[in-house]
Length: 256
Ligand SMILES: O=C(O)CCC(=O)C(=O)O
Image (tube, rainbow, N blue to C red; front, side):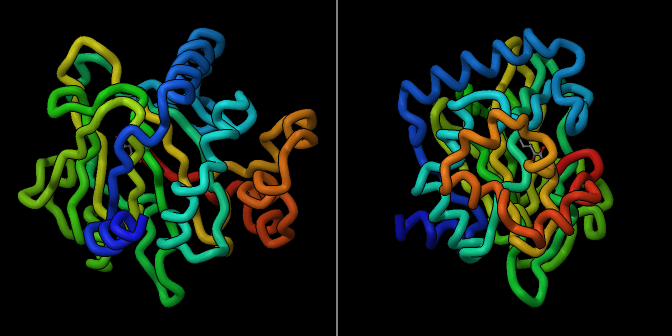
């Protein structure tokens, strides 16, 4: 774990190979596929839709398998190494890059945020539900860019273009990438005939609004069954979060 923390601190991301285990992976895939069918054209609408990708949102409310995933200790300890102990889940979504989708996401930092006087404020975990390959829309990241203090849209003439320093993060389904989300990153084109599914567990520092205000989105029966640990991760009992998140100001543009 120390090695992962070092990598995350130095390069801005670290890869936990086969972290999910077979049961969690197959349960999550099954639930994701079921939700895409159930929700049809409305899928992702609590958050946003994206050309060339299908999305699901508000997943804490939509399956035990998702609640299990966001409480896994190694992942949380890596998130804590970026954000400090006062962090919370900001949103839990799926993004599935469509087959034959030629377009890439622009290089971006999540929520358009730069590190501030307190430190880092955003951290994203990308759960590979399919193998990420050089062809199917793997995540690209620019190592070290979390410490540049700059946004790609202010620095690059074309944030969609490939960058000389970018690396493609490939891996087997079941692998999880923990990423300091101030690092410049984005999804790439899927040139295959199969979808590329990923779960994003996105965390932020306590003083920021949640991207999806959990207290408003979770059904009463989901809320009443949450463990203490989950209540903390979701900031269910934090008046500051109610103040910050109830206005919905955590939603942002095209990406996170
Ligand atoms: O799904 C991916 O590979 C990355 C997506 C991403 O960076 C985003 O939607 O903000």
